[in-house]
Length: 293
Image (tube, rainbow, N blue to C red; front, side):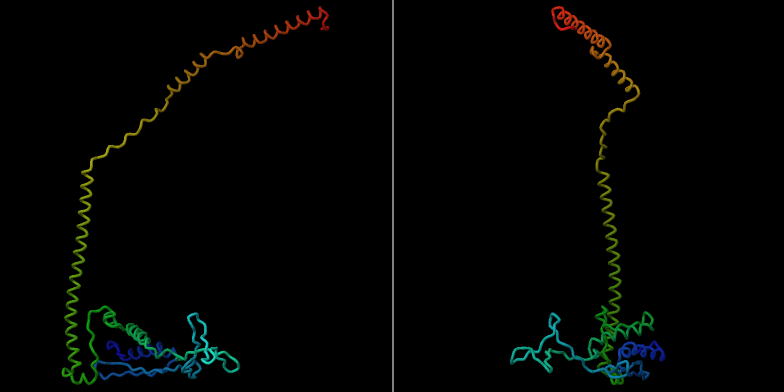
């Protein structure tokens, strides 16, 4: 892996040591690493790793491990005897199940390359200035309009311009400079376009407001609705007249005889008259031999 030229030798050593410890040794690998620098502007580090793990007690872990083969439902898949069509029975009457043999570690999995490259970029960027930070992704994945150069190698560098690889990289770098200039020009055009779009949007909004204000000014003013007349609030004079009329109505209403003093007198007079007539009737009847009073 290439080492940042911006770092001094001691920092480069610490960078590689910490990266190897964190990425490999802490996971159980044996790691052997060294730094090469021929003063040709290409300092780099070589790392050799074991694919067999070492346990914490210092013993080797197994190379492989066996696991049961499972079906879609997560159940073990039986081994079928082709002669009987039944599940095979092993020693001591045990049922036999299909198994998978796989590596004890995933260190040889090619997907690790992406993980380790990303980790190396993050480790380097801890020591680099923002303008010098590196990215493990390709230009295409980063969305950068730039053509990558190819690896030259020691022999090609010794040959210089006579090497096809060196000449290819010279052409690529010239093309990248042109692309960089075009990208800068495109960025300016895009910024001017954004400004123009903002101005058009502001002008459109201003026109809309002007049209709305004119329409409101030309619209005839609406007369406010007249409220219905409310009943007049009675005052002191109205209340006095109302009471006076009520008293007059009471005086004009005839009083029944039975509701007056004269009526009571007439009732008593009629009662006495009835009593006298009854007494005379009983006396006359007695004179004629009737019952004794």
